[in-house]
Length: 97
Image (cartoon, rainbow, N blue to C red; front, side, top):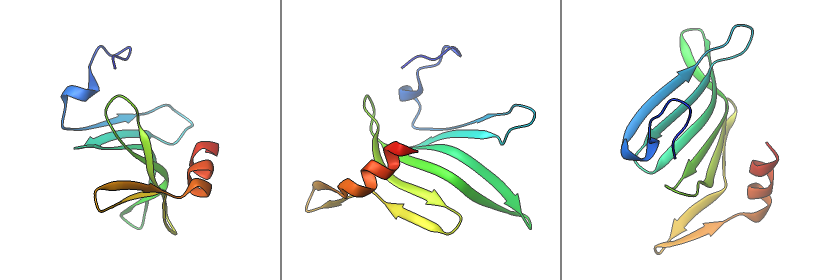
């Protein structure tokens, strides 16, 4: 996947991209292995707090894993005995965001 920046994000095992625009919260896009994080973080009392971060996994197709919020995570999918299990109602919530 090539963006306007000209980089193929799939060749990097780990990266962190911070997009800034005046008047808006920074948008953070990061990857650690197969997990991709897209969302906003804010600082409070010196701590970095997720303020709606969507966690996905995959390479060509990103599949929802969890929704991170300051009050806790909502798990959308997990693996059991090597098989991907999903919560359909939570996947619907993920897609609505």
